[in-house]
Picture 1: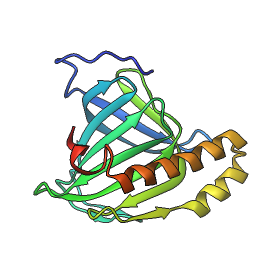
Picture 2: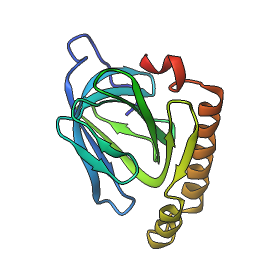
Picture 3: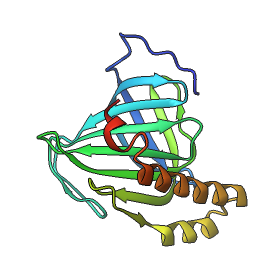
Picture 4: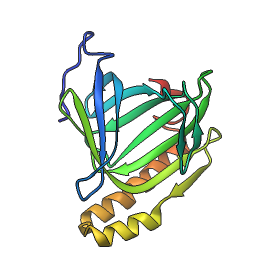
Length: 172
């Protein structure tokens, strides 16, 4: 839901984030702190408490923070990872169905394609093979396939032009 009101008491509240695959199974879940809800934009932040080995990101050390940008009207989300000392580690973008947020739980359906963006704004498209496989296996409707491709193109355009949430404005 796009219009969840947030007041000063709500800011910083812990929310539950849940990533699901198209078949409904939970892919990943975690707790994060709600920073703001502004129209269709929801911003949360979390900190890794233990070392994580991720297939695309490598080793994520404890103390790494993730500022996460979700939209209830866009087909992607953006994670801005910062090292414990504060410098930008990278951006990791998910192509996903628009997020749903009820004030306590933020949910989205991951559509497999990811975009990994380095601090110098070079990028790599990831998991297109997984998208193609799942599109067949889970019978993604043509509109979902089209929206996923359009979302990837929009993300690449935002990176190329250094538009929010990439570049200097990402800390908002």
